[in-house]
Length: 224
Image (cartoon, rainbow, N blue to C red):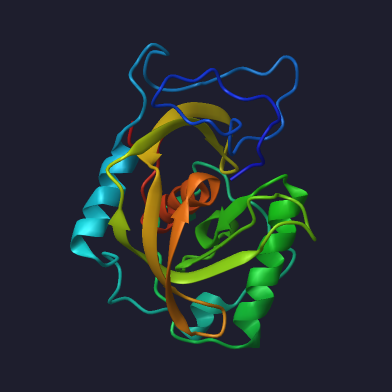
């Protein structure tokens, strides 16, 4: 995901009160959306429905498939994978090897995220088909909190939803209004392999859900 921009959206009572999210800083001549449906279409709601479905099941649909050592190999520097690269639609395997290589991969993902003005990034977006995401809602190195999630699972999502404008580093120049649950309860492992459970709300919840979509091979623009 790309970084927030300073000006807030004009919002309805159900809309997001946060700044417009997840898009590159927009030049003055930016084009709002290039999408395969009319701009007066209703906001995308499949994202919210997908998270609710995962919460009901309480697991990731890909939990049986584990990454091999070769799946975890990478050569820096990492680069953002853009549509229509097939790696964005490949199955993302779970991780059961927690070592220095995985830590280095997470560090490299943070590096490319900051360099591309991002606040979140999933492994398939750098060509690695594994269940790994990194994010920092502050969007600046040394500020906020850097979060690494391995094999994340949605356990619960609130019925309350928020509407915000989103874009994606893998779909440069494309933006859409997306409705998502306002908060989610997550199970995941940290970079050391320790399992933990926590709640996310507001901006961190939205960043997580966007990256989780990538890990589950769900895309707003392909599925619209």
